[in-house]
Image (cartoon, one colour):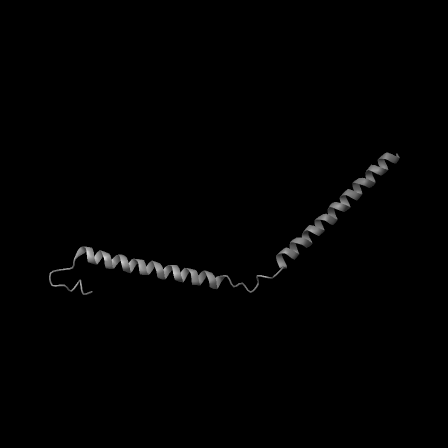
Length: 84
């Protein structure tokens, strides 16, 4: 602000230097805020919840049970064909 109030007018290189410092300070603050927000978001109360894997495993088990039933039926059909 002192440079802007200079009676002979502000020196361009000094104003550019101050603006660059200010912009760097803003970038540093943004980076710090981003890191703080990121670290705050890392807390996940349901992180250890096993609902999705458990349900996925149950679905896989049901699929395997269905597949086993189909294979058993195919085996019975083959056995009946071989006996005839």
